[in-house]
Image (cartoon, rainbow, N blue to C red; front, side):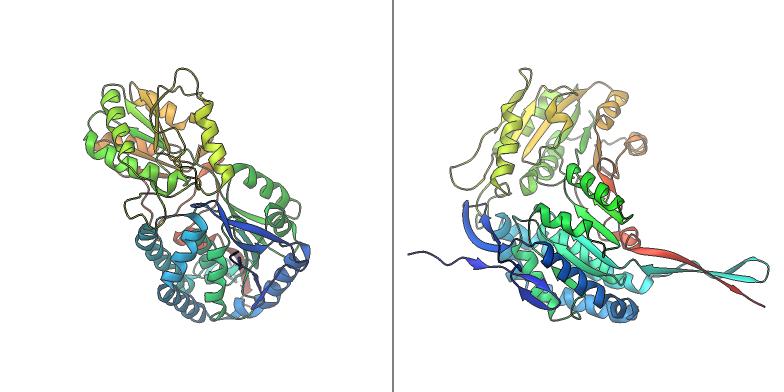
Length: 478
């Protein structure tokens, strides 16, 4: 007896559709390794249809009052709360995440973020009018950019979809959103929820692979391309968008330094850092996975962190004792395992370093010490439940090591010395610096990096403004 696979579909112009040529992709539950659904492998005809729908819907949505757009977003937030359990079920099947943590740590922030941007919709303003030339009055208008092509990642499929569509819609843009090929289910459900609230064509979802995403970015219709993904993918998007001068918004990889000074409470710091490093299986570009510890407490810190790793559990979505679930897919399991397999001889695996079980893509909480600054695992993003530890002798060397990577998204400093925390936060070359904490985000504050971590901001008024353009209007007074 065979179980019929769930059939996911694109959402274009208010209708659910298969790919025009009927092609599909198998969708795998990473907790079991088994195929549970199929989704469209969208081609050029599907991309064309979605872009045409978004372009046709744009003038009316652009011209809707901010109050009307706010009402629509507030209805979406309410609908997310009403359908929370459905969203959680889809997301956990998508990703294998723990159900309880998805319920407590993802859905409430998502709803809050939609409501934040609903409020921001009514603050879309330019500078006040003024006379900067005799006989002339100037004003600045903020306007939506147009159709936005958006590509979301597989580590937080629901939340990253919200980070993309909420500010874009609030500003008056229309959207064509593509989820990752491994995690389309929750995004398709979002389309179902939003479809009963927004006018046809304002929000569209097309499923597919990297080639589908390439077609979206290369398409002549979008005025802006936004992607959350790898550095390699970001570079390809920027290169492609440059051909017709599209605006680009990139949130890429990270290699967050966690700088721990000798005056910390080791037990408390380890407790917080372990959670921030292993949460979501370390599949977070801000994860606390590159720890730098003062040499005077290095050995004690490593021992405590190894114990914390041994006490941390990975498990199936319904395992209430599990902090995190599986890696997202077979390729990611291979990548994480490869970093450990290629460790240099001077490195030491203090905990973990192996796959868990033979079903699904689970990987043990891992701690690696004895590393040097130019080691592969220090310089490159692992994107797994692996925390590395290096020692430093003083503040200068800590900064040298912390800033000595190509990524620049997030960082943290752990110390009781306020002046030192302020010096470090100024000198750390990262888009976010946490002090005595790591990983909290709020809707009101910007999230985005420097260097190869990309450009543009998510969340906050800055993220909202990224989806607008500025127009100068000058009027003669004579």
